[in-house]
Length: 335
View 1: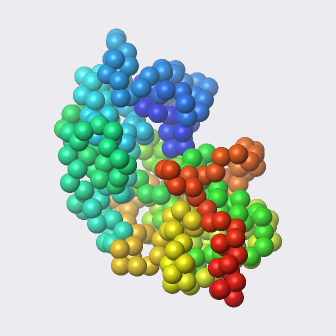
View 2: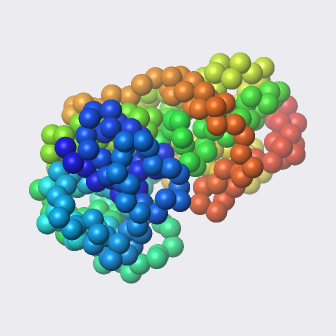
């Protein structure tokens, strides 16, 4: 198949390209060339997806069996790509997010759950927000058509080449050893999906020409926070001691969920169902997720090969990770 990947160099886009190349497809990537190098074997086209003139270059004398859009963040950008590419592509996969569901976090969600009421014609360059992915979905369906559109509502991604740094932060913190502040209940269930498993499932659906929507993450209860951090200790060979700390103490100290202790969300009413997304439709369609210990080992191997970086990990503009002094104060209070 001839496949166009919008993006293709950063984390999930990279995993998609690797999987598609492994299957023998003819892959073209379209990106600005800023997030990383293109993989050997692709035809790389440089351009800005927000530029109609740049996108026009993709249409000249070309036809794509499928488009994979792993980089759409703004409804305007998705609408533009879908409108221009519709006559030149048979199928369009859009990687959306579980954040697009209006009740996500507070209630379990599935493919029929309501999404945020963000319109398809939302003006460009809006501040980041969960509602934008819902607007992107509407833009795709209105411009490309539901019969040829596939929406994958992505859960929390982990694995090698992670560009946010949630799992890498934990691995690097644990490898330093000593007492490690671990948040809340070690038996708290998580739903984390390896980007490689997501890409393999997405490639299957693409090859079949599947349309519709799939909540795409690991099954509920597939791992726990304790299991994840124990896998980090095992993978690094660290002497770290996990000190499980009551989240009431953490909340009282103003510890930032997701950011200061990545992957931690307190068991408060607005987050009680954060790890309860229903993945039964995706599982029935063939989604398979590897054990978290394998993902952790492979991520640690990648980090060792990559080496340390000077820049801190960030979620948006927020630096990930708790300051060592603050961690030590909380460990003392917990003790």
